[in-house]
Structure formats: structure tokens, C-alpha cells
Image 1: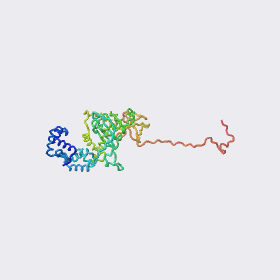
Image 2: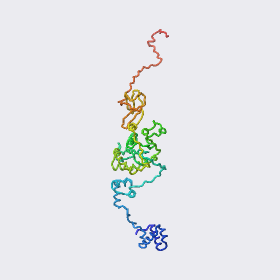
Image 3: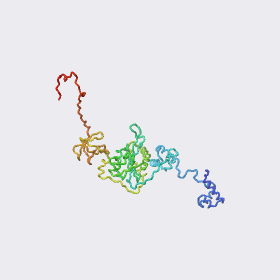
Image 4: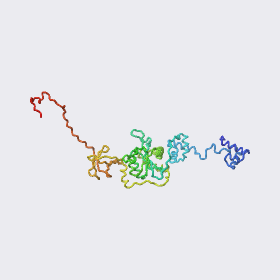
Length: 425
């Protein structure tokens, strides 16, 4: 017989007193918090079986819902072989998806803790941040950022043979929590960001606003940059032309959805890329097309108002899209109608769609296809690249023989041979 715990000892004591008449049925039922009818049944059980009546019938035996040891052993072996560094919830999903093993994530968490495969993280102290309500509409606000990480672990190496960090650019909708677009690139420079958002507006549409880090590479940290077009960064210029508002977050916590998304992806997406043995940015970008719908189906929420308010591009915007997503700068026309730009010289042709003069200031556009275009008064100018700038011809200076001032001829000089020199004046 298994030993009695304190609750069972108390229960047996009260039932014994009720049987001996020391307690009434009402008193005993109140002490045990059971009905009188239940008390009478237990008294009968104690009278017939003694102390065994207060011991649960499954005590010391496996539960009715317990999992067989062979199943547990099989699950743990599979995790050790295929998913040793997976978190319990993600491991449970992969066991069901790839092996047909259905295990409750909390049960798996307990098993993995017992085997040393999972160690709960210690909760750290966090600063207070006020909650911000989600936006109402899909497309009302997109949180955007880039995350540098060893997404390919040891499978992508740099030129020196070390693992290479790459950048995952991603946007998440504030109302639904959906990943609206994601793309791997080597950096989060202007070209990479422009390629990202050109694809976004062509496939999804124009959101009302984009929420990004104040101290990111996408803006100048200058108070007057909001109103002064010349101080805006290339990204803000492009968004202004598309009538998309750019909102700057003062801290990473302010754009918490995209920060938490990267935390989740650095765990789940890294392991998905490993399971599919992907080792290049091109392969990973193709994989994202099937990964994102599954991710959104699991983690997205229903918006307050079920309406997509992304705006479609106008025909004029579509025609100007290459110009909008170009790196812009200014140059001045030289006297010989040449333009110098990035160590190259360009000769403007004689016939142009508009009148140009030397010293006119042009807008230079570097398109994403790496071509250079010069624009003046909304017209693109015709030009061709010169093999090199003609060198200026400098005249050789005439070197004069120097002599001391107030020269005094020597005594034997021919001038001194004249005894009667001509009078001066």
C-alpha cells in the first residue's frame, strides 16, 4: 500500500470520526467540502476497505492519458537527431509536420527539460513601455527594418572563409501582424532598400505610412530635414514622391512588432533554412515565398476593420517608377557642355529636348539598373560618355635671364672708352 499524504490522512481521520459518531454527517461533509451523499458513500467504502478507500485508485500507476515510454523515447531520439537546438513549440510543429508525431508542446517542454535539451531563459528586468493600440486597417502602417544575422550559419562563407552575415529586410503590417514583404540582401543600403520597396508597391500597393528607426540609414538626424527637401535622404525623397508618409521611431521598442518578428525569425527561419539546406541569398528569397504564407497563417491576427487600404500605383507613377527609385544628386554643366560624375565625363549632344546653357544645374539619377540619366526641367538630356577628359595645353613660360639691379660696368667696359661722353638731356 502506498503511503498516505497529509490530505489523505486528514480525510481518513474525519471519515473515521463520522463512522464512530463523533461528528455528524453535516459536520463531516462541511469539513471535507463534499455533499452528504458523497460522505455516506465514502463512509461505506471505509467501513468495507479501510484506509484504501481514501487512496486514489491510480496512485502509483500510470495515468489514463499518459504516453507510452516507447513513444517518448522515439520523440526524444528524433529531437536529438534532427532538432537538437529547437525550442519546444517549434519542435512540436516539426514533429507533427515531418514525422507524424503529435505531442503537446508543454509535454515536450517537460521532456526536453528532463533530458537537458531545453533550459528556460531567466526573465530579465525590462523597462516600462506603454502599450500602443494596433491600427484599424491593413495597409495603414507598415513597420520596416533590416536585421543583420548569420542566417545561413556555416553554409555561406565570405572571401576569407568565415561565416557571412547578411541582412533580412522585412515589413510587417501593424493591424494584422502579417509579413507583407521580406527579402535577403547583403546590406540595407539605398539600392537594397529601393529594390525592396519597388517590389512592394508593384505587388502589394502603397501603404499610407512607413514606421522605421529614427537612427537608421534611411534619414538624416536633422530637425530641418522634415521640411527641407535638399536635406532629406534618398529614401524619404522616394516616399514623398509616392505620397507615403515616413514616421521615425525614437527607440527600437517603439516599433516592437518588427523587432519581435526578427527575434522569432532568427530562431525559426534560421532552422527552416538549415532543414532545407539553403546556402545562398537567391535560394533563400525563393524559399521566403512559401515560408511567409505559412508564417502569416499561424501568427497573424484579424484587423479591427476588414479592409485593405493599400493604394495602387497610378499610370504616371508606374512610368516614373525607375526615376522615383533612383539615387539623385546634382551637377553643373561645364563651358564645353560636359558633365563630370563619379570620375567619368559625359558629353551633352547638340540637339536636346530643351534649351541648356553652361552653368545650368542638372539632376543626376542613378537608376537601379546602374545606368546614369541627366534631367533638366523634367526632360532627360541626350549624352554619351567620353573616354577621358581632354587635357588642357599649357604654354611653356618664357624664362628671362635675371641680372642685378643698378648694374655698374667695369673699368674696361667699352662704354668707358669714350673720353667725352655725350651730355644727358
